[in-house]
Length: 202
Image 1 (cartoon, rainbow, N blue to C red):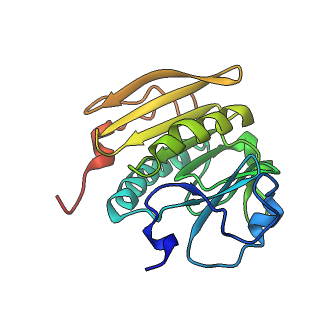
Image 2: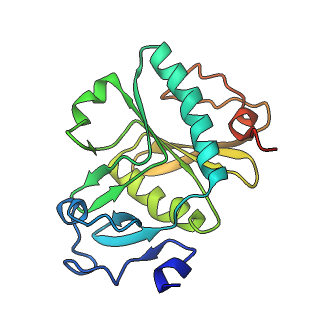
Image 3: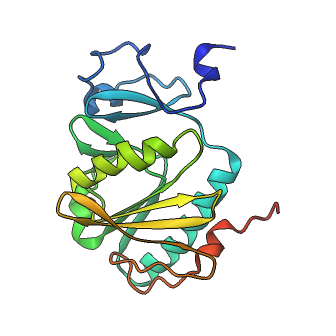
């Protein structure tokens, strides 16, 4: 088993040949050979993120399905699910679990990725990514101007809704069970939070 296979956390990918940590750009990232690993770039630092498990994928799929039905049905815009690259800045690239682009943001869609701040980003945290999602991504999404950020916690079965105020997020609340999310980007989205965590395997 290699060192890479043993890493359970989001870690700086110092072993990957490239321009050196702190100097990575989208162009460097896009040129990476497909080695089966998942990478993101934050302020020029290349990170390797753990591959998601089946339960993570199931929750992402449920959120995507409910949001897609609402967003498209209401004619609000488009919705995407990982893997899709979001270039927030030339030196910051993420693959959010779910991304919503309103019609006014259509020009952010490029040939293979999104350039600029999406209107809504959803991240489903895991034990190995919780700190990264709550700190690194929180700061990067806020600085890039992402208006709304949802942090989904499978263990607690909750969704934390963050709204951008200035250059920082304000927590609107943590929701669970039959609560619906008071979103500003998808107002009227009335799906109960518990629906995101329903599993055919339980």
